[in-house]
Length: 564
Image (cartoon, rainbow, N blue to C red; front, side):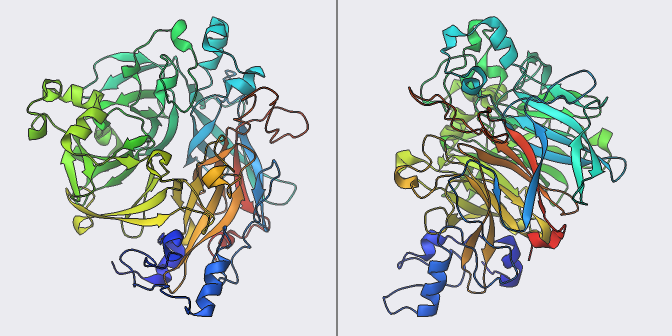
């Protein structure tokens, strides 16, 4: 492909640094084939290579913020010239009814209000740290019904009202309006109808809410991911069984969907047309003929990337467009052929399988249908973001130690003719994690001011700082930079507290700050005998850790610091 390198200094075309440092590989697939092929390689180039080890950034960007040094401290560390403040903590009151925010904040969507000092924020609550909640690890059969009832309020999502006030620093800061009449919660007991070919019933609750998306008609999409740890016990899950099924024996088929939230009516519905699996998120765009397209990743080892294309077209009228995600076509990606494969009863691949003669079954058991249809198994497909300047699709594959992929990769998918509804595409590995570029296990991606590309990492508390990940003691956020020779530099920007993950990166519309969810600090607490709380962030001393939504801003208020 042809790269405008000046442009990609901002967008960070993720040429893999691990590849760049391998003498047998090119700097980036599709770019100029510049190689380090022998010991006599240019000494200046060698110095540049050495300088970007462990998140140092591009040394030629003299005006850029200085890369954050790594630290073992249990704190939220930000690059010099930046500071952060808290917006919403788990358990904080969000409205006049006394509803409280859930645990483990994740996807964030910022909605401007009626004036410059009012806004709204959607916050996913992916799961809960019951070990931190109880000060020990409780076995599922040790939990009381009252404890389970309390836990069920900690998942789902919060829609909060924000107000902007002048801080003593002289800067404006957002804070939650605790007596709001407009804020509301969704949790594991909210009544939610299911719509589409696999719908027709109402279920209780939304949970495992990971990332998400938003629509042009004003609704928010929240994605149900690891739903298999709540009502039944399974082996190999990311979290031990919570034990809810003892008191509430619900069907797992009620979960694993994308949920559409309407902030105006304070209601939600599950969109079965987008399939059922461990949904990481739901990134929305439009095709050339104005149909809605949603890109979807199934966050598990050996799972697939999907795309939904609406049957109807966007009119620009919110009321008329409201049902565009109810009916359409769901496709799975076959990477080796560069094809989007239609998941439909008419697909010949299903001719000998009676289960998939029904569209409802295809949508309910999407993983099985996708494998039969030829979907490519990938290493934990997670966040998907679209370059706003050209429609390129970036998606993160976090890792898969089972097949020797310890560090993950970011990939680039380009639709034929740049049309999001196309049925063919080109695909390439665009960046790989690893010790040499200082970034491992990419997860959440976002585009920021001046089309800069940023990435957050996702290493589990049990794996960080050990074995192949020994160089990575914390999860972090990076700005990804490309120089004129198509080398990529990951500039270390924010480092998470102990055991935590940074999720939901969202730049404010005016570019003055970036919102982050600091999720599950202290996740490894009480993991074994002799281990107590592993984090005390954000309050320090002997306090319990608290998942918190924060805003990172330039200390001097100059928002161009994000992009220079």
